[in-house]
Image 1 (cartoon, rainbow, N blue to C red):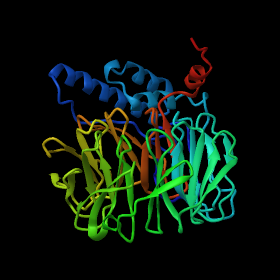
Image 2: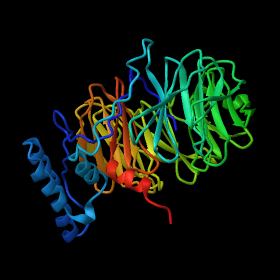
Image 3: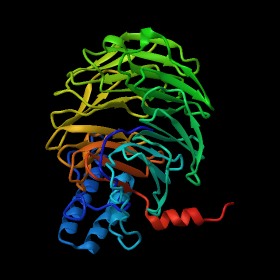
Image 4: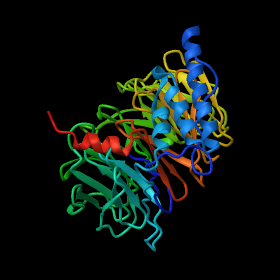
Length: 443
């Protein structure tokens, strides 16, 4: 899982703080679009969150807990669970993970989670990635071996190994349990920019500034060599959900679709007017959405290369766009303080998500698709109800713009990476509850 941006250090706070000097505010507004009864119940939920936030600003913790406890049960979601846990500071104090003790420049270029969502690994320009335990905040080990900055890092699907790549053009495989170097793999001739694992097995794809894309299986690689699909600058986007397809930038602002099993070029078609900032496959791999600094987001038919839908209404261009997990919606960031949600089937603009004070850099759907997180240059993260277009929570724990957001695979944590010194982890499950689950006897 690749989420590339920079930051001098990594700060992971494993306790949520509600939005004020020490905590983000939790609030909500607008209305439910269902029946009058449901509307009244949902408005009650929003009112309880607002009352909890007001009590919190007065440091009335007991009153805050009372309001959260009284919120209608049927509407309680991720932001409610986070809010409840955030009040119980004694269970788990904040944990700070960082590179501040390293004298070398240590900007973070990539982050990866273990499949069980319990560990996080960060690649850094100082050349020595680190791996932490998300549950305890403990630094587990450093991956020492690269001689130049590390730009890419990824756990294998079974969580037993970690792969890294960087400026020395060497792929390195590490034991994920001990941090020991297992193998050095050669093939690329210049720096390795990304590593993407196939959902099944141990196959993975790497992209490099040597103008090559390679599919690796064990220590051998197949190069995606068809010149018709390769540009001088290769930007690789996420694999399709089943791992069978890879989308990359092609020559002259085209999009190339590659078969990851054979390395063959499947299709190359006209994309947007200029280089693409982001692209994403839908759930079955039949469609690809792409966006850039133009005001038009396009969905392409992967097989034919034809435009399936033009998504209109975007202002200012976009740095990121993605399908919801079920493929029914597309969300996009915007340089004009907004985020957008469209209906894929009709192409209709469903929501203009208003609330940020500056440009929106990034979006992320929760694994169940019910929530959308947005990160902005206004130094806040907002969480939205996708169906209603309602702002559910706002988090302000940052001193720099938010460039990357990602939910862990189990959906319980939201990771926010700013351009400065921190990555903050918001967790919806109390540490005590996690420990209890971990220590529970097996049936």
